[in-house]
Image: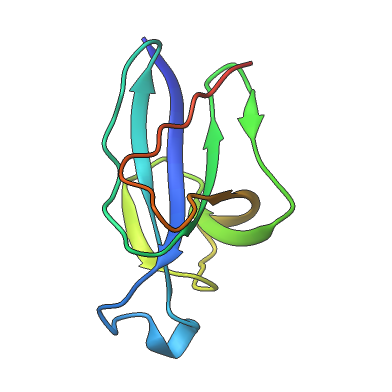
Length: 109
């Protein structure tokens, strides 16, 4: 059973999102209860996330915003790129510090 669908926003150093402030967006990882999912490798200490569950629970924040598709399809884009099939959501900031190696986020209701 899927507990949550997770999307992230992170600093993209590939150059693909330079015209959009350098931030990429990616999702949906489907995470079941008790499951651990590897999302990304990054050298940036700040990552943002948004998640939602089928029962209507959301993990949204006020630290920034990003567009996510409303149809639940997997996506990869740049921040501030949306379409009529997208919605803008608030995201939580995760500061992983300067010496992080692995960061685990627990989604609890």
